[in-house]
Amino acid sequence: MAIITISRQFGSGGRTLGEKVAEKLGYEFLDDAIIQELSRRVEADRETIADMKKNGSGFISRIVSTMTGRSYMERLAGNKSGYVEEVIYVDKLDEVINELAAHDNVVLLGRCSHFVLAGHPEAIHFLLVADKAQRVEFMQRRYNLSESQAYQEVLAGEKRRAHVYTKMGCSDYDDPHNYHMVLNMSRLSMEDAVDQMVLLAERKQHEPIIPSPKRK
Image 1 (tube, helix red, strand yellow):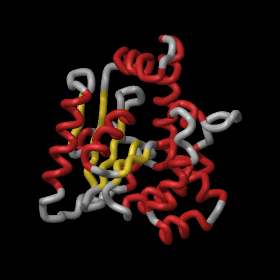
Image 2 (cartoon, rainbow, N blue to C red):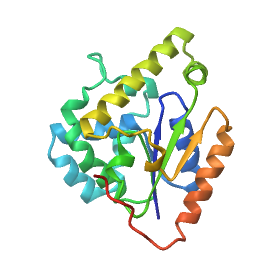
Image 3 (tube, rainbow, N blue to C red):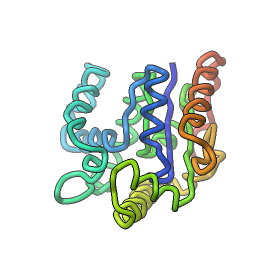
Image 4 (cartoon, one colour):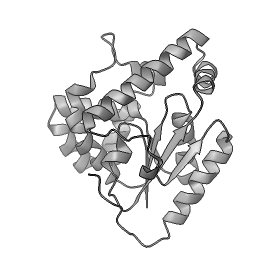
């Protein structure tokens, strides 16, 4: 039983990596667009958390199923008015992420999940980094974007990431001391990174539970 969080520099392959790790471990993968949608629903409907508690993964699966017909980039972009402003729901992130973690065996991508779960004894935190040029190239290849489009997506992703962490009061989100492992995707293949994460997760499951330091 474990919870894996993946923080990343935008375009370093976090979603692809998270999906592969979840598949190997038999975990449920929830990307940042899904966590954002859950947070938005909690802001709009106070019964959402109650439904999460009552129905567990079944409720989460229904949320996921309503979004799987859209590409990741479309989900991340939100509706025609643009990416949902973080200030609308950021105070709900803590509540939503803790509820998701309560189900165990999940991989959470982004949305400050490592910060919210800093003191969780079963959480394993990973940070992905990569050179900006490589991140742009990855976005081009993975989402069939032009070089200009990919570059703008990377810049927009960096801006969103900095904004939501600022709203959460976390200024040291790239500090390696906050993570169990930092993976440089400019030097590691996707397969090697997956293997390292799965290996640590499997070993962690057999270790005595020692609470991590709580966030300040």
